[in-house]
Length: 168
Image 1 (tube, one colour):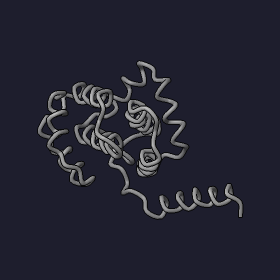
Image 2 (tube, helix red, strand yellow):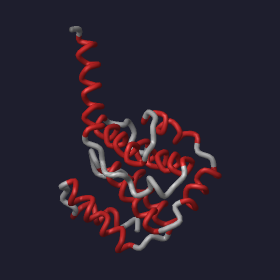
Image 3 (tube, one colour):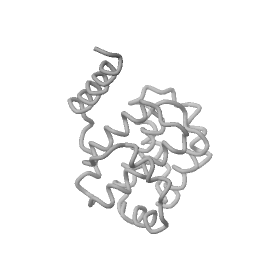
């Protein structure tokens, strides 16, 4: 077996692991049409782009999130779509998430994706802040999301809670 064959097999096994151990179905999966789900996924990808280079862990979690939303396709296609947003798409997305449950689910998933490898950077914080402000999300709801996110990820929250508060 060549090195390339071994690398291919490792990639196939990684995909099999993801398929055998998926995330639970996303809240948005049965509450949005394909157009909105595609916008949702591309907006999730925006936080990866705001961090610079997408790491393997970020890419794997993003793939899991896409599967939980019920979307097929390569993660790279959603990531590249970030560079081609139109004003109409942004408006359609922000209007399409028409309940706080949908909005908070999005914020939770975007925070999970952004925070999987490292603390949030200023660009990510500013982007997430814009979503929160446009929807006028309740600060207490956001703090509760952060609590659960950091509990799930096993992160000490003291320093980042202070950083997030300055944006809220």
